[in-house]
Image 1 (tube, rainbow, N blue to C red):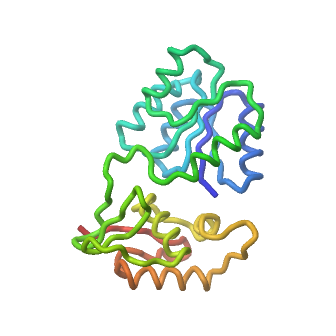
Image 2 (image 1 turned 60 degrees about the vertical axis):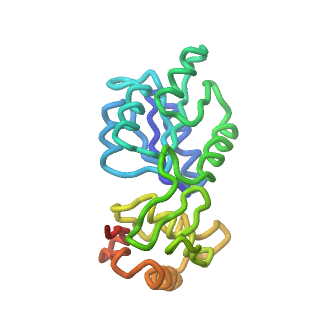
Amino acid sequence: MAKILLLEDDANLNETVMEFLTEQGHDVVSVFDGHEAQEKLYESKYDLLLLDVNTPGINGFDLLKEAREEEVLAPAIFITSLDSVDDLEKGFASGCDDYIRKPFVLKELKIRVETLLKRGFFHEVKEFIRLDSTLEYDIKNNSLIRDKESVSLGNKEAILLKLFIKNEGEVLAHDRIYKHLWDFDEEPSDTALRTYIKNLRKIIGKEKIVSIKKQGYKFVTQE
């Protein structure tokens, strides 16, 4: 499940979308104006941005353009009543990944959100992310490489590593990790999580995954 920033100044639509996505298991932070959205963007990292365009303060187009310039890589969907080709072109030029026109049915929103979340890294021009002098992460293939050789990872460890890399430097709470690591029909386990963390540390180095007491874990790279 994902952490989503929702910018929508229509109170009724904001509440409807927030409740719907929360029911899908997502962690939704909702705001009503562009300035507040801007503050939230730099307070935390998000897996997805849902942005209205005509909003008080900063409009959605300008907000996303500035965010992309500051290397905010999270995928973004504009939700707007604007429907001209020029508006569409402006939206994609500002850095969005999808566009949904009002009015829309919630099922359509669900499909678009899930489609984007299934992809890997966004707005990342590099093909590889260097973790240290011998390790790098292949973004396209979601694989770990050591000295040009692929490193075998268990399924959970692979998911966990990708989550850590996408949120480097951010403390990830246990609940957030649970939502990414276990499917809805699986039972999360702190004991199992510690095992996956231990396994991953053996492969990438203990110092890269920092335990933050009573908060969670933080991933850091050592150049």
